[in-house]
Amino acid sequence: MMAVVLMRLGVLGGLLAFWSWAAGAAPRGIVPTPAATWEAAGRLWESGRLTQALGESLAVYGAGLGLAAVVGIAVGVLMGAFRPLGRALDVFVDALAATPRVAFIPLIILLLGLGAEAKIFIVFLGAVMPVILNAYAGVRNADPELIEMARSTGAGRWRIFAHVVLPGATPFLATGLRLAAAVGLINTVVAELYTAAQGLGGLLALYGNSFRMAEYFVILLTFSLIGVVVTEGLRLAERRLGRWRGE
Image (tube, rainbow, N blue to C red; front, side, top):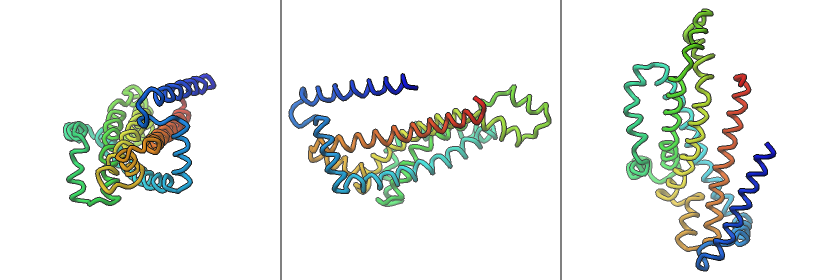
């Protein structure tokens, strides 16, 4: 564990060194220095602008991702548990997964307007597909030997499903949720850029259009930090579930 922490600190140091070099090598005003970005972060924090935008974006991101987790797990598990249903729906799920979510944004805006509902639905639409596909794959790939062993002990269908199939699908579900977290964060930016320009996405557009690059980098790094925190939280939850399953 300590070795991993040290290697991550080494990579971080290398990135900071490269950033400092790029700031000096690039034309003036294009790439801010780490010090200038840190100062801009302090100004945005003290003014309350960063905290307000962060709260708005996290509310949209959390609602969309949470809804995607609930719906995606339910649909994927049902598709895997009832094979005819899965075979009937998988082609439509694959078609929707292959369609760029940006293509739906004009329709979503027409139906839901420019408010929070539209943003949450855009996040949901992007995040739900990895959850469905991984939940479906997890249930379908249940260990047949464990299922047969459970049957031989007299376990019924629902007991086998609850104690063999679902625990076996946990790694797939965790992978789906991590992918959904990443896609959902991207869609949060897209939603805030295409609808009412609020939250971190609105600040990203504001500072990018006005070439205030230090503030722009602060918003970029804030999105990166959100992604790291959410992903690491899901990875920690996966490890704890693994211990619960006896791995």
